[in-house]
Length: 310
Ligand SMILES: [Zn+2]
Ligand SMILES: [Zn+2]
Image (cartoon, rainbow, N blue to C red; front, side, top):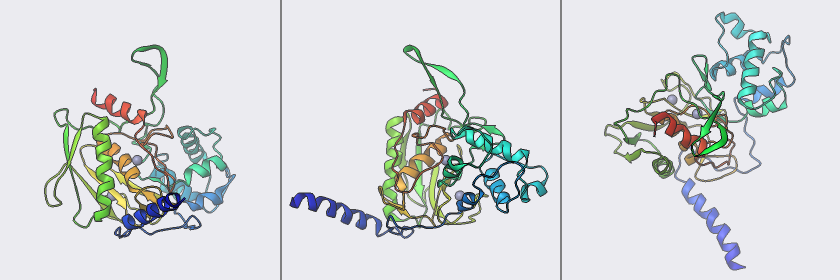
């Protein structure tokens, strides 16, 4: 019995010790309810074409941010008219997230849209790279057909084929306790791909850099405070990966907080050239719940192999 009690207490203690030095992280309880920048979507429940509700311009901004919408005429972007363009954008979003494409802001759509997510758009330059490319053969299994869901950025940017060893560094003010989770994420990608990764000092040159930022931080993709967008990273060979410093971060699964390693696995996928996948279980799926832990999925590994032809 003593062992049974000791183990959970020691785990809790360990988590407490691990989290204590993370300046940006706050410990939380399951009852913690914080507001999210995506909460306005809940007020649009049941909205459809022809409606005029005051949050509709915010929904337009949300869909534009993630690549689903682009009005040539800015007055349409900022008014509260639920027009054809908005309906069509919602239908595309619903198809990407396996929801019946009704064009109506229904419960399932609200649930997906309010999930905290990566800031990288699902659609870049009008290319909807979350849509399946169709059936393909699985090598060695002549009668099994699989649909690939991994996606690349438009133009398939990638690291040169000669460059299989990539270096990364952390900004000088990066929380010391957040280094190990990111390093573990690089190690997992190292094991699953032809790449090798090595950390270099904060003042050395590197292929990739990981930093914490909040709100507007000068790269054209402002963070939005607690909840909403959690992190983002750029396509090859840019190398920048930013965590939103306003989130509650954790090492491992902690209610109300986001796992640093899980988010790093996702953002490293972008650094290597993967876009968002429509497979829920894939690390490259755009959304993630608080307390959720994920690992690399076959879809992610197949994606990297397809991009680099290995
Ligand atoms: Zn992403
Ligand atoms: Zn950034």
